Length: 88
Image (cartoon, rainbow, N blue to C red):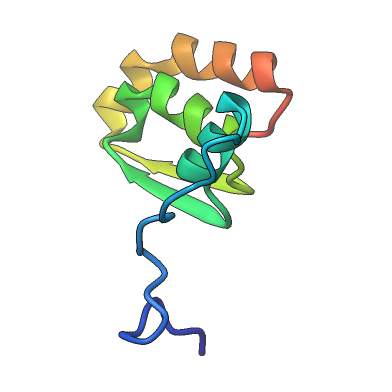
């Protein structure tokens, strides 16, 4: 079983100080890169957040919400699916 974090090697630790000559794009990748999968509750209301998670490196996003909200967000979810070429 994989540990989420431990005191000697915290997975949620800050990136640390980056060299001053690091290009802005590389700095952003290091600071905001995400690995693995993400779970988002209330997800149908946040297609923009889902898109950002996928663009920043997540392998997949599971979005959970109540049926009424999912129905309301159906068009936005379909647009996101088509834009990213993913299965929802």
